[in-house]
Image (cartoon, rainbow, N blue to C red; front, side, top):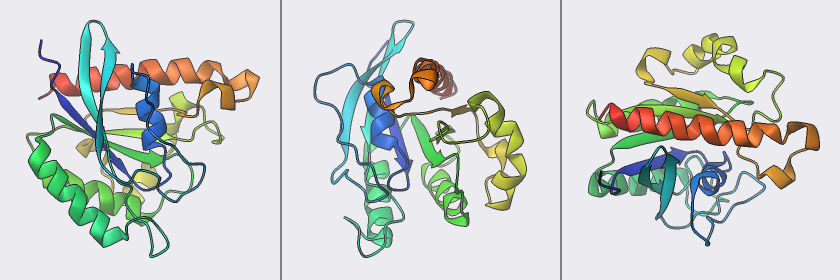
Length: 199
């Protein structure tokens, strides 16, 4: 099976896209990460990732959406740049990252905007991050927040799969939550393998 299957990770700045890639990446040079909501990814970059079960793909880190004038790239310019990147990259799967706490209408707008950019031929999955800070367990988050998803404009029927995770490095988690990292890694790999099969 060809390893050149493009999985594009998108989402607002600071949501954990680069941390998610580092969870999957099997090389030495990790994606740069940040501890705040200002983006640290200044240019798109692809990483070869091992998905398990003999499968791999190219995971693409992208510039964060939703930054104001203070950020690396102002929101509308970031959207235009990402649309251009999606058109030239020919994605096989789009992964939309959003936080498990503090969801806003802008998350729903971004989801629907870029879902329409890739069209019906490209499956879209959702990864909910930052669940080390949520009162819900990762397993319960999706069903417990269906009303919130609909209120911000994300129709769960438009999502072909989801994973609710923590993308923080294991060393940064409290000892009693470190098991979440391994569970999260497996959940994301399973989600991407499943999403790629729908293409």
